Amino acid sequence: MPVSGQIWNNLCRLARSKTLWGVLLLAVLWGYGYAMNTPAVDMDDLAIATYQQGGEFLRQGRITVWLLQALTGIMTYQRFWPELFFALSLVLAGILLAAVLYTAARRQAKQPGAQLLAAGLLLWPYHGEILMYSNQCGVGFGYLLCALALALVLPHLLCGWRNSLPGACGAVVCLCFALGLYESFAPVWLTLLCAALLLDAAAAEPHSRKAGKIWGSILRGLWPLAAALVLRKGLAVLLCAANGVSGQDGTASKTIFWFQRDSVRAAVVIPVREWLTNYLARAFGIPALALLALASWAVVLWVLRHRGGNGRALFAAGLIVSQFSLGILQGTGAQMARAVQCFAVFVPFAAWLWLAPALDRGKQGGAKAIICAALAGAMLAVELISLTGTIRYNRDRWQYEERLLIKTADELNDLDPAGTLPVAFVGQAELSPELQDRLVIPAANPAYKAAYLIYTVLGGPLGDLDRYENPQTMVINWAQDAFGGKEQIALLMQQVGRPCALADADQQDAADTLAEAGEAPVGVSLQDGYLLVNFTGWTAE
Image 1 (tube, rainbow, N blue to C red):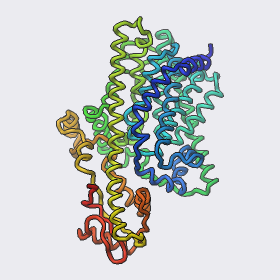
Image 2: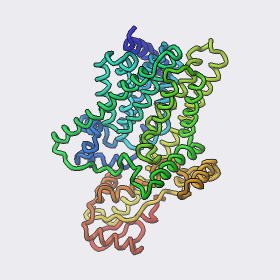
Image 3: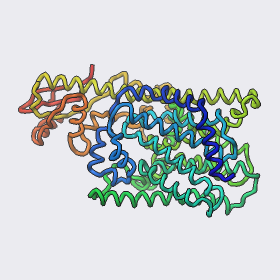
Image 4: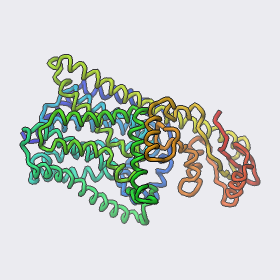
């Protein structure tokens, strides 16, 4: 039977399973119910209109984000629907990915293994961080596009250059729009590519393939990615021309940081130190990163146990390197929220690689199946606990900021019930002590000892290890300086029901002078012809 037919049969087998749909529905409700029903606002939620109307998405090549917003409006802040779109995309991606990987392994799709793989993708902890931004709901759609691309290209990948070129071209289109969400879906594609090739190599007769065939399969997986990057660039140029968008990409982050250092030594030491800290030291205190470390070792041990040539070691090495390819290109390990998009595929795949054969055998697997099932359940429990904690912290942080904004709005209404006076904003808000405590890894955790060893050898500052990326950036503080103006803080005030006119340039300069001199009253005060809001020392309590 052709490879495409095997994929279709496995997909139909899984799609007809009420048990699989039920398990994934429970995972959605348990993992994302809190996010769907508890509102939160973050930086990009406020900036979506600025990015969309100003053409910034098109300048960055994020054509899919621009199209989703233009056609559906789902990227704008709202409750429930963005998270639901995200979760449903992950459900479909997980089922499709299970069908494709079983096909690559030349096995018939079975329920326990498919549940492990799909639920693992759905419940990856850092999805909770992604969902702090409503407009990040497109990330789930990106996984679905990558899984669809793998399904389309698999016959071409496994059977040769002349096989299924139309399918490979379809994969190019899917990857184009996945990359149009984020360039970080390139490592996701590399992860899926190496996973499929590793399974195919393991299913073949040992030492039955020569180097030319091995490298040919790699090239057949890489050219769709290269073509997708070119196609995305071309579509971005056309959309920019059609919408009158010009100018340079205004994003603050660039891809290559290696040579933006004071010396060659710094260009090497700084990224190595950051990478080790983010992915090694913090693994002692963050379950998601501990799972990443365990998954990497699991893949290494699996290849050592299943030696047999055919490029297995090469594909396994590529699978692990793919997890850090974004950080390697950037020369830093700090962009965790972007890099962990490929971890969401890699960790469940590593678990599936080891556990699915025993789980799928059921009773025939005996005690081994029971042990594997227990390990799989423990892994998913760790993921779910981490995911729920991450979402809850981010939502609690926004609720604290919302209370502070509501308190500010009440004070503004007391001093100016008609809402006619302009408002100047200064100062930096701070998290509550309770949130600050939840922000960092406890000092007794071994993560600090690992970090101390890293910094002793490689230098650098020592401080608290945060559980989350960009935890210090409160939305209130970001909104006061975003895009060189105060428009975003005005949007925040509008979000809590108190629209306000912004102070003119002279009034804002006067307010800034008071703040710099330490003479600005804490909270809301009436000044000469305008109202002053000073967030420094201003709390929600």
